[in-house]
Image (tube, rainbow, N blue to C red; front, top):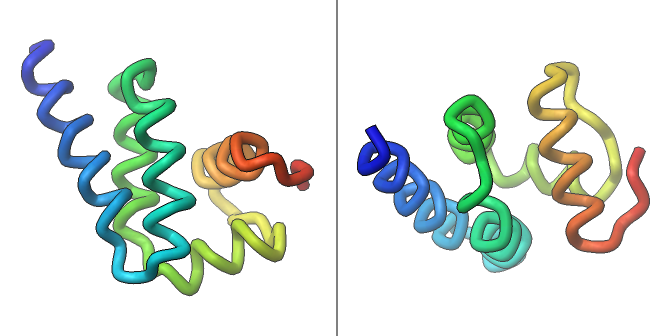
Length: 89
């Protein structure tokens, strides 16, 4: 089981760093490298679902502070903004 979560963490880290836009590569990649080792399986589930969303939507949520409706995504966007030194919304 430990190997499975480690594989998922490595895949999530790769996906976070290879988004398609350099800005989101940096935002998500740095966050992923700092936070993935401590994420629980449930938190990793939410992060993987976040990674499946399109960059323009994530950029809007991250930069403009327009939060998502779903609580799990709102918590992740808040953590991203805090990690990068932006005021929480």
